[in-house]
Amino acid sequence: MIVAITGGTGFIGKHLIARHVARGDQVRYLTRSKAEEDFRGASAHIGNLSSSIDELRQFVRGADVLYHCAAELRNEAEMHNTNVLGTANLLAAATGETGRWVQLSSTGIYGSGLHGDIHEEAEINPVNAYEKSKAVSDSLVCAAAEKQGLPCVVLRPSNVYGTDMPNQSLFQLIRMIDRGMFFFIGKQGAVANYIPVENVVDALVLCGTAGLPGNGRVYIVSDHRAFEDFVGIIAAALGKRTPHKSLPESLVRAAVALAGLIPKFPLKSSRVDALTNRTIYRIDRIVSELGYRNKISMEEGIGELTRYWKNGST
Image 1: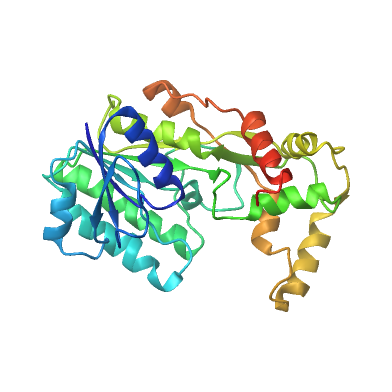
Image 2 (image 1 turned 45 degrees about the vertical axis):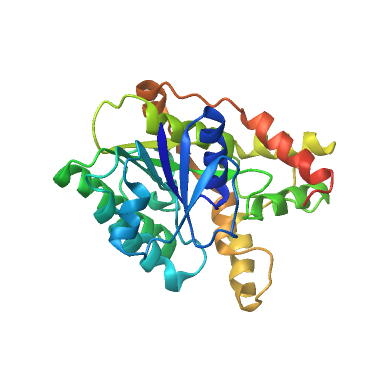
């Protein structure tokens, strides 16, 4: 099996390359320079999403599966160029040249402040620049599936974690619990939606290799626990008592608003949103259609991550 991967030097992409190499597949990945990352058993293709269509066509040609994992997450000025125009450029190169396109997306495009169960067909309501650019990227891919017959599938994970994750917010939460500084916000009932990178890779490989019931299918992949239970998992792995302190949500939001002018104030409005989230991302579709299951449970994954932090590896 021939596999092509964009974003192969990123957090999820590195794990995806390793998985396919371990399977014995022929893997090629797009990278800006040979020195950027070297994966044993995989072939580097020098370029990026703004390369010429001919260059990108050479990268994707003959691939049974093309995983589009590349995305700009931090630099807002580059998000449209990379996530939207880059996707359009890659689509122009890939149509008719590759087997199946697997689009790595995010549940973030459904928006924030939601309540209850969210399924794949929920309204798209992105808030920040990254989510908006990913929503457009997804729409371009789905349009290519509908109009040009490009075989494709879209995977939307929730919050992805692992010991090598670039986002430090989960480690910061662990640190607060360890130091006895954590407090719950508002009423009970908040939900933690997280998924280990290993499970995301499982889902990506299924999307790339399993039989699909139709073209342009969208799948959510996630796991969830009540936030009280989630914090309890971390506390247990730290050998600490589960915290029970709580502050009214209105009070915390007022304090955050007043402190908004302080650049390094540790609690931002977006973080309060995360700590009071009441959304559950449902995975019924990928379970029933592709036979997916979360091989690593929340207890196992978050427990292992916490012990990694506790051992001083961060």
